[in-house]
Image (cartoon, rainbow, N blue to C red; front, side, top):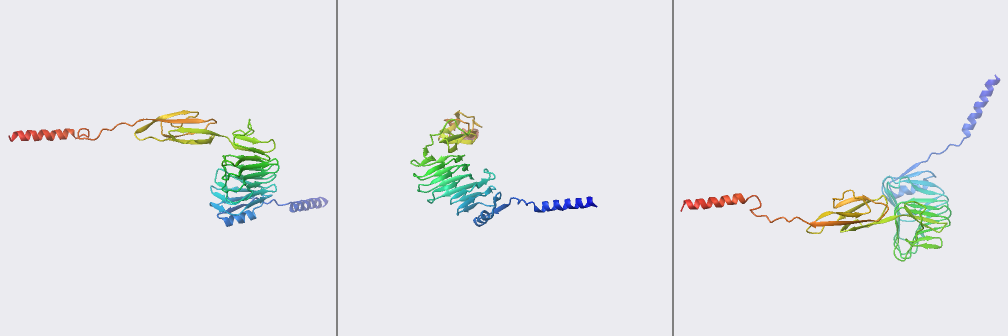
Length: 323
C-alpha cells in the first residue's frame, strides 16, 4: 500500500513539474505581398520570426528593428525601401538567402543616416543608394559590435555626403563597391577620413580591402581592372565573377582572335566570350582581318554562262542556215 502511494505521489509531482514547465513558442513565418501586409508583419513579428515576400514590394515607411531578430526570406522578390532603416537594442535584420532576391534601400531626403545600426545590432541588405544633395551618410554603424553587411553596392550622389561612417567599435562589410562623387567622403572611421586608395595592408579579411583605425573597420570587396581594346567589357570586377567581353568588328573586317593577358577565355575563337575573373588585372585586345571579297554576280559566275553560250551558238548556226 505504501509503495502504491509513493508511486502515486511521484507521478503527481512529475505531472506538476511538466505542467509548470514553460512552453517554448515556435518561430513564425509571416507573408507579405504588398506594403500593407509588410507593415502588419513588421508590427507582429517576434524575435526569431521570418517575413517571406510573395511579391515585389516598394515600402515607403521607416523600418525599425528594436531588440528583435527578424529574418527576411526574399523568395526571389525585391523589397525596395524608400525610407530609412534603423536597427538597435541588440536586434538584427537578417537575409535568409542574399542571393535569392534583393533588399534595397533607396533614399532621397535629408535624414542623417539612411541605414543606421547601433551597438550589438546587425543589419544585412543588398544595396544602398542615396540620391540627394544633403550632407548625410549612406551607412552609419556606431557602438560596440554594431555590424552592417551590404552584399551589393553603396552609392551616394551628393558631393558633401559620406559613403560609410563607423565609430565606437563598429564594422561594415561591403560586398560590392562604394561609389561617391568627387568631394564626397568615401569612408569615415570616427575622426579619420579614408579615400578609396587609403586601405591597410595586409588585409584582415581575404578578398577584401581593409580600412581601419584600429577600433573601427570597413571591409570592401577587392576588385581588379579589365581593359578591353576594340570591344566591350572593360570595368572592375571581383575575383570569381564571370566577365563577358565582345569584339566590336569594323566595317569590312572580320574577327580574327583575342590577345589576352591575365585570364583564360572560355572560347578564344569567338568574338563574344566569357572568363572567370582572377585576382589580378586582365587585358584583352580583339584583332581583325579583311573580310573576303565577293566578286560581283554576272552570267559568267552564276552558273548560267554555259546556257548563254549555247544560245549564242544556236543563233549563229540558225542564221548561217538561212543565208
